[in-house]
Length: 482
Figure 1 (spheres, rainbow, N blue to C red):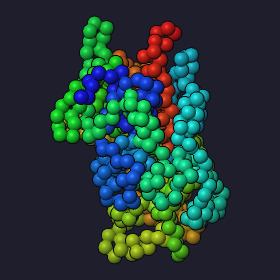
Figure 2 (cartoon, one colour):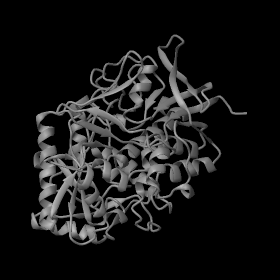
Figure 3 (cartoon, rainbow, N blue to C red):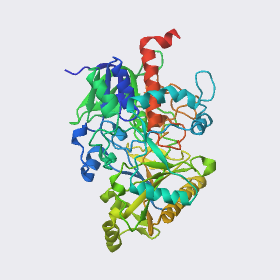
Figure 4 (cartoon, rainbow, N blue to C red):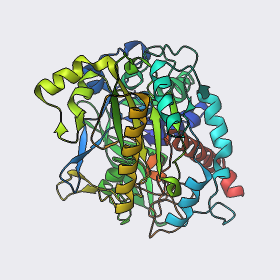
């Protein structure tokens, strides 16, 4: 019979929740990990685009843009969350990225100083060790093709660091789940080893309806959650602490459903907007047969230098490619699309990712329906245009005879429940506990006060490791002693 009392309940199994649950359970704490998606083990992964999209991703969500277009929002819905279907890029935040956090939310460390990147270094070290983060310089032809274009414009491509091991066969199937297990996710690292320790109770197909909050005289406190299983049956489970790590699009919705009233919940959503920019070459590039992000150009990463990062090389799988490719005349249709698809092996792609300023929002209407609002400011629009322009110039300098691109996509959403000292500008404190409710923590990308200039997964895992340490100290009595 399943137990209904735990030390900690964690909602969501991605870069945040999977790490918190795995660290605490591996240390012997009784942890319930709830995931709305299913558990798809490594041996089930195939490079079957339609099946992976159905099994591993949230149904695609959209946000309208002021110009009449839409922004596409992508994220994982499976054990491991987006870490199961991302490109495994493992980069630390730059000091200039983290310096923005204090300005945004008043975030300080325990000494009252503006929160520095050095605060995260021991946690980065631990995550990198557990995931085996390494530099990847085993480039394929398409990356060298792109490199020639960067060099012609006075820029350089550098090898990416990624959480992949030597079993990587460069199938290009990272976003359909790694079939060799070389791509590390919270599923095949943190969660796998915690399940082996028998302290972790993983329940899948679980939709969490609300956090249970009670007040016994000391103020409101989280004491458990209510969730519906795959059959729709409701369950109530209790714990000393609750960690919500359902992702930056879902965590604010759960907090609002649970009665929290902080006006910052759902606001200041960062999108890390990007486009894929494709160049058509005379010779086959086979950019679909590499690990998708092999290298990056950091020359323009800081806001004052341009505010964008270009990653190479990548091409979407055929269905996604066919349904998103466009040029200045709009989406491809008919003979133009057929011609583009017949040349699929000849396309090489760059991912142009922009620093945004957290001007989007997650909205829940009176009927409980979600809505996402985007309000790109002129500086953000200029960065998007500059990243697109530079990518086009690179591909043309590399020899592309035609350049096309996708619409705007967001895969690195962050910041909708920000961490900070100021309750008027943040949702949780420096230890990730909500300002309103004791014992209720946020443990995912929602915490990040301002969008990073690089892929955020390693930073989210570092913050989650830090949160797990804090919870362990709370349960062991070390915080009370201090």
